[in-house]
Length: 330
Image 1 (spheres, rainbow, N blue to C red):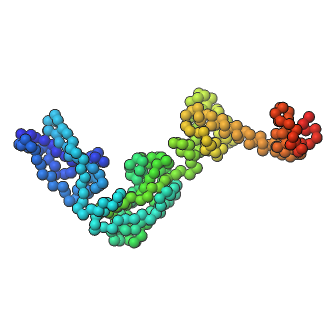
Image 2: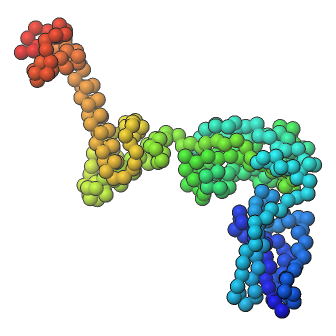
Image 3: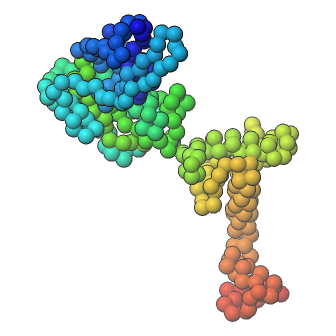
């Protein structure tokens, strides 16, 4: 006789589900057999998941000397309509998301209107959640798990936290998201269109979008890594300033440089090169701003100075120098 443990596993949830399966079943036959009655409230049980999940039965002897998993199967609710991505029962009309729309970019710290139609007749008690598609995880605290909707057009205002991307499993600004809705009885549900969630003032360095402030933090770390702690901090103070002392580069200048072609990584060498290029550009801009009044006073233009420089260096000719006052070339 065999004493065996039988269980049902939700593969998607990586969890054992299905009460009513024996944990010490006595089998006296060479072909074991157990009749499992799937509860009518199966999907309301803890970790039972949803009807889109895959399941498999599992068996082991009670002494745990051998075990195996069965083939993947699905578990359905009777009279289910398999509309792609949105299976629903025949008795319920499906939810339809009205907003946000596909491709919309939502900003952290802002409030987004989630609206829908369909589902059970009002009043509806619905579960709303936000899903990170890349992470395959539910994110977004502050969304209702039992929202009462009394209107034919449901509406919920979701305030996206300012620290959204610091929350567990929230992911990054490159990820895609979608809202999800179901009635609390789990008779119908649907997923909304894909949207993005952005941080204001984001620098789109390929693969590593960061804010201007985060870019300065990253640059400072790179300076310390390459130049040593003391020299790095001193260079960072020169570049970005210290309390009451302006720096050579501001966040906007660094952000503008980071958005130019050629910035493809965020290692220390790339960061220092970026800072150096931004510093040169800042110096050039300041020199130009200071030189402009002096040039104007002398009756010169930046163009004429460039032409004169070309002549002096032997890289140009007097052609096109009519704008240079007499004696300027000498």
